[in-house]
Length: 169
Image (cartoon, rainbow, N blue to C red; front, top):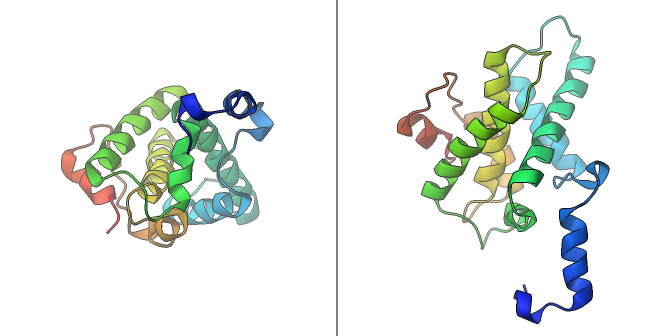
């Protein structure tokens, strides 16, 4: 990747265009990644009074909502780490980001059609998958495959041990 000094004017304009993308173009996860995360989320929460087909559609919307939130709060380049096994963040940074982004997401995102407890679980779980995928020696496919082993804390006060349990091994 080029430094700012090495960027051409058109490369800089593309960077700005990406940053200010309209809502419809803001997702950074692929369609398959969104579906896979929604399927894993379906194992963690149950939306009351919904048939499975409607529930799956709602879960996809929840994943999209969180993906858009992350687009607003992380550099776009962070998503490059999701698809790279060589580059990535360390475990301590992953724990910090899961905690910080979960708190911020809970303040900014409201999903009124699911109970608050499940909303917190959904937020932490999806953020957990994405942050784990950005770790060194991990990628989005590996994180999604191991997602069922993520232990999502259910209370608002997340301890260091709870965060450690969200880091995939």
